[in-house]
Length: 186
Image (tube, rainbow, N blue to C red; front, side):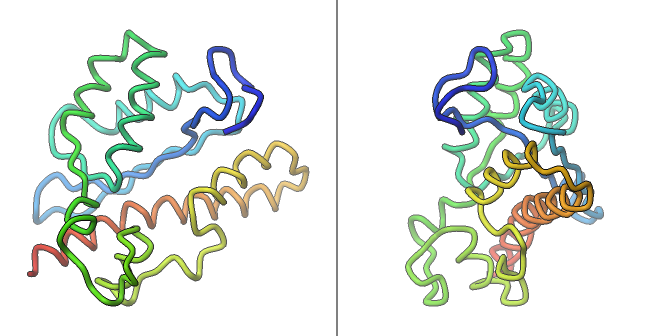
């Protein structure tokens, strides 16, 4: 999000997707498959992001998200920008289930400290997992780190930042898998 848009067709402070992570399970007993995308830089086409996402999401199956409103907003903008992909993006939207819902409304644990953020829910339900040890531990830091990559000259530093971005985003989707598993235990 920048005050001055850096791509045609964008507006000030538009959320521009640059990364996603998917933990995909084709059936209950199957192993998880981890798929992801991380743009090369802020100049990367949103079309590339959208096409990659559509390809990895497939046409069937539930799509578990944490904060459906946020995810729908990103997808809505992509639909508007790339009308030829609208039907396939809408297919993804129609399959989304918000894992945040039970924690926002009914499911409370004292270890969540009054928060239903995934960063509070995960260690409350899966104590061995948290975001604390990560170099990048939240979305705001991830966005800033990605944006600032264009100014980093050192190749090693760029690689470390990209690795940290992948670790953070990967934990987000793995966390949803682990949280859902805990809910099924109850």
